[in-house]
Length: 182
Length: 182
Length: 182
Image (tube, rainbow over all chains, first blue to last red):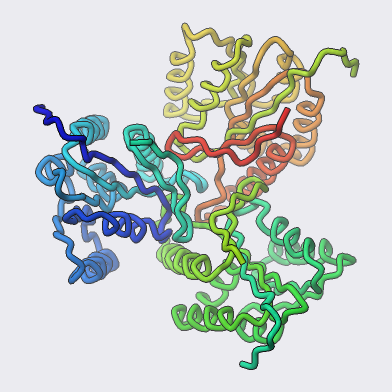
């Protein structure tokens, strides 16, 4: 990939947190704190009414707030290739729903993770990734849930390793786990 | 509400933690570290023998230790209005059981949370709130458990936002998430 | 127990983390950072093929890397009495599987924990303990899972109390919860 001589605006921020921890709100605030154009990649698929309502709520919350929204439930890497650019900041909300979508589509998860990682490492512009920490409860009996937990944990480790900044959010309060001096 | 001219002793501390994380013990230690009279608001309802024994154990642990105990499973706001006072410190143990009790009673949870928040913001005296962090495992299939998780997470965010101090406790060890200079 | 006059090389490090959090990798790295001989006490029992494969994978990962591996699914205290020594560092991976094994064997868990604690407090050499934090999800309906959660939480508190260093690992990133100056 061609590189210009200006300092790279690249940064990759991972926001980890539990269900209803305020992680998305924190990620949105980080994006708004920049002067960049804001692109929101929504990975939620509406499996039921609860989810449909949740998606609609989120869309309403972002309306009139200057976000361009892209819905991409499966091909996240391609969406990132198209959207990552120095002049805009991309928020992916969230990796957990994307993992769920790909797992239910019977995808080869390791290949999926490799491709996502390669795309992010190409460093075309700043990105904020939201992901659930799901490994801190009792592991459920359900084999699919266990497989999900394995993949979610592995992806979080890989994303944290390549990220320049990682925050863990509990009750809306961020705790920095990794900070890379630029 | 009438206000006197002395500096307010108000503080609201939220202690977040998992099941058997030592969060209650940490909260009790914080209260004992003050010179104030100690009031314990117990929200546990005895649904089964396991719970009945747990409640009895806790009562024994507090006996001979100078706590006044009040049992209030539902109307937490009224108990706080009565008990919050500058000369005493009130420990609420815990918000999670209160959420469970109100959810099973089919209460309007948003109204419940509004009322609790308003009561705490009246700042009549110091309070320590204990609450479970429950969002860091795999979300269960059970719809009631999912609704519980949603409400628990939202309440934790609201309580953390208004608190002057927030600790997260794991394996008995506190980690400060928020500290407000007085 | 006889004590010599040289400074004790004793240290007990507890690594807490979720499923697939990178806690074992972090623990292994801590051991490799010392000049000591490395002993790995594996507590995993192969209940099914998934577990058998996992155990085999781990064994492969440690091969050619200088670890002596001991498999001990039940009598952890005796293994520690044998292996803890100033010239070597012992990694126990993990306490969670040991709790599971002992619970399924219908052991008296409090006695088990007492014996483990006494063994560690004899301070014969450095040890690194890996354990899951499992209390941060919604408590499952399953009574055995609930009992497991209770014991796991209590053991983590006891081990954290006696440890000289405690790290919490999320997405491969350690966060220090306790650090004792030597």
